[in-house]
Image (cartoon, rainbow, N blue to C red; front, side):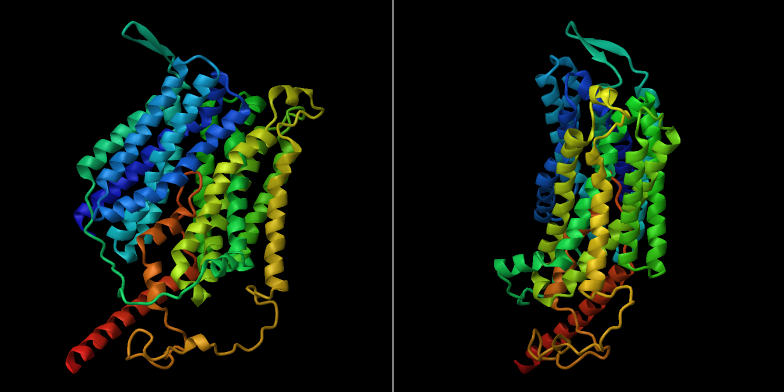
Length: 542
């Protein structure tokens, strides 16, 4: 890799570390800030969810921008940092407004604008997909994932500084208070300014996209809206999206509920909460390593998803049983319940994406809709990320009066059972698919001899006159349309973003995904040679 790209990867790494570090200041203190300015727990939930909504709106805009400006990244990144800085300043200024609606909705607006900027962080996936050689991309993505975890680990150090801020400054004879809650906005703004300067000076613009479509003449498989809807609602495509929705909803409970519950149970401040978030980051990264090892060992997607949901089942039960004020919940019990759930995400994520990818690529009639279906899959993550904080704050968290008046002093309502119940529903769905629908991924059922499919024969004249008959391997060659849709910047960005939770990207590719990428690469090279020969023959005939 050339020197300029190495520097650029270093810049992307610093973006992740700075981004994660500054967010580790806001997340633990957000609930304290909202309630301090007169907000309710429902408003806290809305403010927690609004960045997901703005990210969902803005993410595709950054992709279109990069596609239309010749694969240049400095200007889109600058816009991302500008949005982030503006949102952070509004977050800070909310303290100056009258308590109540004005202050709360200023925080809400600030977080919405911050989300518009945060959507630009997916540009890192796009940069890697278009600038880094394919055989080095997984290594770079692993580095970027580790950098996010490092930022969360350094969070307590930043919070040690922030919690001591208790002063004020005078501007034009107007006194502006600085405290641990609103100063988090200034920390965020400073981080955005630092990243803007860094990328403007050191980020190297990649060359124009290296990988181009094989040919513009390839005719995609025609599929209407009715047929596409029927495919999307088919069990093998809809079920992985449901699993993703369950994953983000379950994980969100512990992000939203952790700060207020820890404060009520143990009197923790944002500093102690950031310590626990650091532990969570370690667990998530360790889980990624386990997932990588399991993939190498050929552990099935069924097994990994079942293990992840089992962690949700037991973690959810532990949460219901242990998060009780009257029974003097211990710090160890509190941490264990969060650690169990945190381990679920890296186990489930890659296996579930692999499950979805396998279902899509097993249907040749959907080859022209591969990118659209991946976007559909990602919507489960975005919708879950937007809805679940509101649900947790409104229906799962109890206010102080309700906690003190209850017999057991439980911090959560019975709705907290949704974590374990939804995970059990997913496990039941896996068993239904495996044994009732006969998927037989585990190989426990007797399978009928495989029939040679009609699709294994590639007809002459499909896109070139040189191709006819079966391949030596007996496998159907991937179509040009399928290859073009898969080796596509937007598809790769969506695919990588689908595994991002708590701001931490998951670089794991399952054995099936690696095999698919290798096969598509081989098929692409074969098509390029065959199309070249086809053009030579046409020129000879002329």
